[in-house]
Image 1 (cartoon, rainbow, N blue to C red):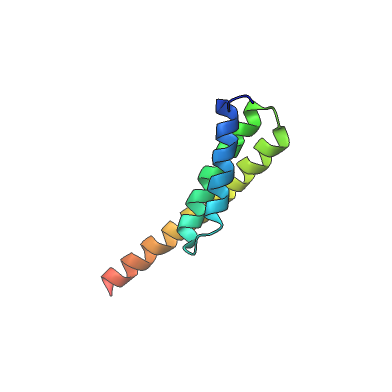
Image 2 (cartoon, rainbow, N blue to C red):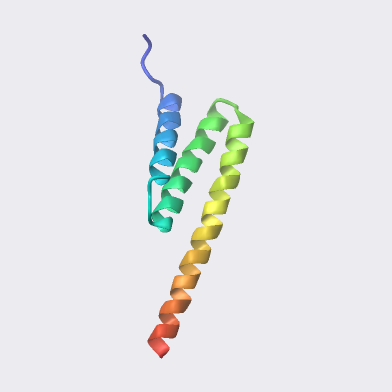
Length: 85
């Protein structure tokens, strides 16, 4: 039995991060952990030259960032409106 190499460890880490993200109730934690998992999958996909894996996860990582920015902007504008009221 061979030991794990770095690329396999990245792949397993990505799988664990995505699985953990799907157990989150808080959407912000879900998005952040899923983003980390997707980013690790992009690295993994590039390393094993699995371009569909890398491409799809890059796309999903972008979606997570888009939604996180949207959430943080909404929270910031709500905080500002509460402070001025």
